[in-house]
Image (cartoon, rainbow over all chains, first blue to last red; front, top):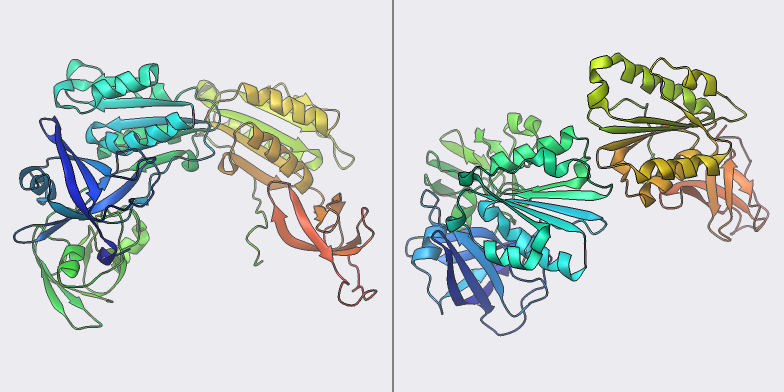
Length: 318
Length: 203
């Protein structure tokens, strides 16, 4: 999937749902129905800024049964690379944005007999679309939602009202902590666990599930780590001979796209594997969760959506 | 071997991460269970609590009867010895009604036995990666004729006469996990009567 597949959308509504979180409703500019998606899917939103384009992946939180609009919720990250700040500060109702067709790296297991959803903070968003499916299919499920402070947290009232006893809330500032060991113990055969949120929560849940003997096929995690900043470097494209500069807050992928290239990519978070690129020379600072440790040590491949060069120049097989 | 569906087997190994263990074997497969029990015992008394419940279900066969050794194993597990496969399958269903996530199944026996157990477990919600499989004893294959769908539970030759339709059928590596059988197809369809040499290849 590349940037050329983008779908033009109009911002139909913006709602402030917590001091740091806004929900954007996006309607297709051409009026036609948007592509269908399954719960847990994300889209890459392209925003045309004054100086540069921002491209960020966001989970779709609206109903998979609704194709007249998509909804995303965006937490403002002041230390981020600017995409979320741009959405919060510059985007108005009526503006045009572009979204990629939805892709799903975090789908519910169709054969699962019970589904346990564990969310930390803004990690709730992929679950919002999954919850529509779970309710429509009358599935057995439980939602566990951990956050720091209730006043800064989105969707609490709605989740409590819609999911009743299936929803469990943990406000850490009040001393209520989510205990993965308790949640995962004594679950019936055929249960799947899904976790989305900060890296620490994901690690704890995955480690605990493995220690309790859960097989890998029943443990699902999604982390959208923003690409890290770093030292600037030069990327050389072996086939065209182009030399491009990657600034401290840019990614190789962004720079390629800004220069008219359309490399394969999907998640923009170093997990899906679409943008894997062969490295001809140069040392890589890997930030992805996709390549094996062995491959990473060889510096022979890189995920251009998140990883950076450790050397001043890197030559890619592009 | 080329065909992806052909199942793979490996030596059973006690999985210290699992919180409940269900050990199943037929005939010579009992040896594999004894090995797993030895491994569990080596974890020592302190590990008992962490190890969780352990069930042993065994079906003796004409090839081997290891009931006594399983029952007298130092780990002191109360092994269930089933009179026939149906008895063993219903014992397995009973054990699995109490099972929770973290359960590991260890199955050892011939292929027909292994996949019959896997299918009972699947009905209970257990996935392939929660099951360890070791093939023991005869290499005889459970085979279904693609023409008449008759299953022969133990085929030892490359070509056999289907007991359902009487055709000479060739045993392929193509395996159905759902049915727990290999596939066989007519070997002389193009030149009726020209049947290649029949050899015992799955002794």
